[in-house]
Amino acid sequence: MYFKKIKFALLIFFISFVHSESILIKDATILDGKSNKPFIGNVLIEGDRISRVSESSLRGDIVIDASGKILTPGIIATDTELGIVEIGALSVTRDDSSDLYKIGFRIFDAFNYNSVLIPWNRSNGITSALTLPQNTDSPIGGLGSFFVLDSKLEISGSSDVVMIGRVGGRGDGSRAETYAIIEDLLEFASSLDQNDMLPRNISEIIDDSSIAKSMDLHPRDVKALYKLINNDLPLIMKANRASDLLKLIELKQKYNLNLIIMGAQEAGLVAEKISKNNIPLIINPINNIPGSFDELASNINLAGKLEKEGITLMFNAPRDHNYHLIRQGAGVAVAHGMSYAGALKALTSSPVEVFGLGNRGQIASGKIADLIIWDADPLEPSSMPEKVFLSGKDIDLTTRMSRLTERYTKNKNKPNGYRD
Image: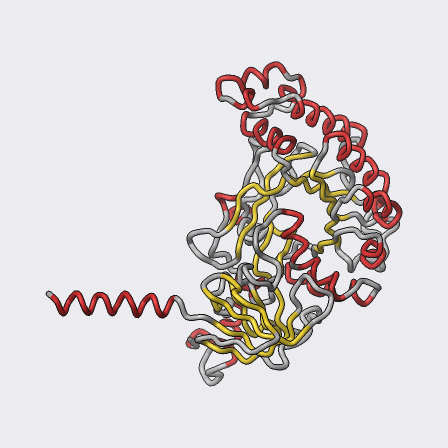
């Protein structure tokens, strides 16, 4: 019995020792997501956190020589369907829309940790993402969530961190009606107090509101509206036309909205007002020609101009599942006037600050160790991660695509069906 206890104690000690092994990334060129200049240094990971960052020597249990390599924080994509859409043309693989709910539709519980699109984007540098639903038939409505792309069954993330909305760019309905509905909804939300959110009161509140009744709102929708006005919930509004951007600024001021504008292709025409009102933007910096009548002022120099106005920027890419293309967009932005440090912040620390995503997005002591070692400049599309760390764990970069490549490029003397 005594020897069994000794063996058990040694086993526990061994397990604890293995799990507590520190990782030292040595002699990397560090782009930390906060400062403007790279530096050669060392990063020590203990558990899920960065414990030290230093230009002096450090010690770790596992040492990774990153000489000649670039180390950055993990990239955060701010406009994705990761985990809720697998194949857009197949409805059975889509969980991004609702037939019942409007403003309170949430996608968190539908997230598919096993989506093949997650390792694909992760192997290209995306370590976490905001996943957003489709726009509902309400001009504001639908709740997006934040997910760490670690492919774990026990989902790592935060639910309902942002609401979405849209004005312009539609073939049906009038802008005037859209804005009237938005204002009516915001007025209704502003009239609510915490007592109204009690189950016994909320149905009565809906019955007493003409806008709630006409839009057939449910208690879940009303609770989401209350959260928008009273809990400082970020609101991403998709809009491009300069006149729409000005109207959104007016609504932000009137209702004290935590507003982020996505698209904003004519933002250069009203950049001073956007900056004065401290409104972050999510843009695709590759756009250089109008995609619609709302984007007539599109310009590939937009990111650089907006940065000079002091506007916080983040990037998106067309929703074709390749969300890692925001790296290419960042590189294009740098090529057309944006600072390199500003472009990297748009991919890392800016989303954290704007959406309140916790201790991520920077290489600094105490931050969560979401890190990438790159073989070359991360803003070059041909560059690839050599290692990806999520919460301090070295992540396998195998994807379905890499497995297929391996399958069909080895054992060439066998028919395809017989290859492993």
